[in-house]
Length: 390
Image (cartoon, rainbow, N blue to C red; front, top):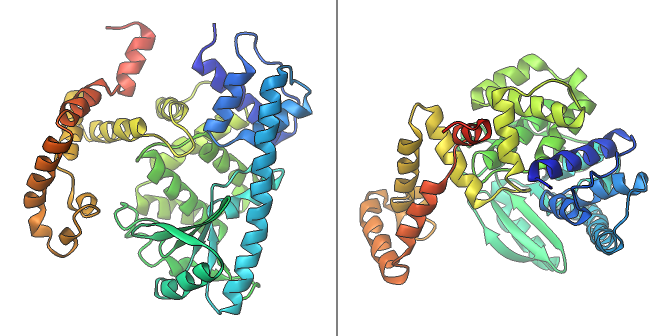
């Protein structure tokens, strides 16, 4: 009988073998290749997992592996086009004398055994906020169409699959780490390429974990984020300024998060022996229940967990979460009611407006959300189920 835990254990073993260049073990008989392929796709590790299977000649289900191979071909084609586009955009920005800095996956991909092993949904590039209008005009001229704008970036698409996010800050304004990154260019360094900037390895790693924490404590994050930590530290750990890292992670309030995700990264991908700490086991559980960029359920669970860490009971934390849905904060509600940007005092008024609108258009949604909130399972409840306690 198969279990989700068994599927994750085997997928992680495949990823570990691909990263370390070792032979993969045979698939346990209780698992199906179809479920392993689906899980790899869910976590954005399709190509890396397939490379381990292919290198060890484990393929045995023709229908699944034809589909898996086709998916890999599409991802690799996208990655090649992304690489070409990043070079092309860099040249255009330099020609326009527009400072820029590649972010996220663009800074991690070269640490993997092969570029295509690190899937990238889009290209993330930081530009100065005062250059956003000029950058926007450039993207339109190059055939891109804007599809979304947030407090810190604008997303552009050029079909069929080129997506670029131009950032004016490293994190959203509503993110708790925004004060730390309020001046994103103060840590930037000029590179040898004209108008191109980067971060030191220390600042790159801090940003990598801050970005991961934002997802983890929001909707959740997937295996790939943990794998990025392992790959980065395997390459750079011995040369990092540990005293600087410790100070900066303390400023962000991420010391514990850092320790836990590093523990989990090396437990999974270097096959450390022994048991995970309670925090490591908790993180492993939530990541296994998530996907590449998390889920709505993960966001709900993480909110409850954060409030339980502050001393609230599970019931009180769930009630607090439900109240944030009924009475959302000003920043969240301002996406729908723009007047709140200039007149925060109107928040109670718009709670009423929103409440009436919900009651008229979706009368059952409040009860439905309340029932969903009650079903949120805390890690403590899951551990009790596992141990057989009532």
